Image: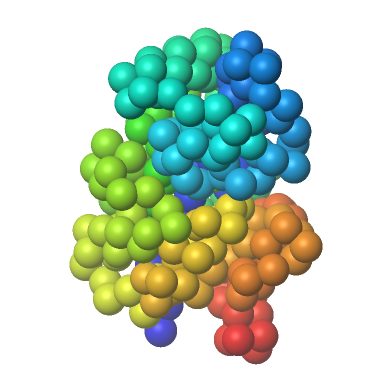
Length: 219
Ligand code: B16
Ligand code: MG
């Protein structure tokens, strides 16, 4: 029986993926590396350093470890200039109500994000109080596709992994959910997230009861 819902942040609750893309694209351009929206899909859910490694691999460039740290810091500084301007209204339509409804139904809610900036984003959206547990890149340093972030979420909720489901927009995150033994709701299309157990394009017109019934039917 499902009792816990674990939400990724970037791309599931708010479209910060576009700000990650703009910041990485600006850095890639400086380095003379072509970087497209399609390339950006590979960066979703993975750590900041792993994202840089993917971009450097695309450009066939190599840097010393301390130079890579400096590049990551520059990317993050630029990313934060976007985040500081974020408005509360940028939360995806219906997600707050979906979570509030699930809480009323007795489900426990955790965040499960790779981002070290998740706390700041929750505060910008004013939704920190919706979560019974918060797991982000400052709590668990091992990013998706490793399952650690979601396993920690289940542990903090006091639930076994099999009683949790994950909401994810990234290939790495879907893999992490499955490796944790959890069903994965893909926020996006079947084409982008072929391994997700079920797909949602948004949170309007869906309730947690219907979603869980659908997962049972399709799994
Ligand atoms: P930061 P999520 C992930 O967040 C992003 O999808 C990914 O693109 C980013 O590299 C990672 O967080 C680390 O983020 O640089 O802010 O620490 O999707 O797991 O919420
Ligand atoms: Mg995400």
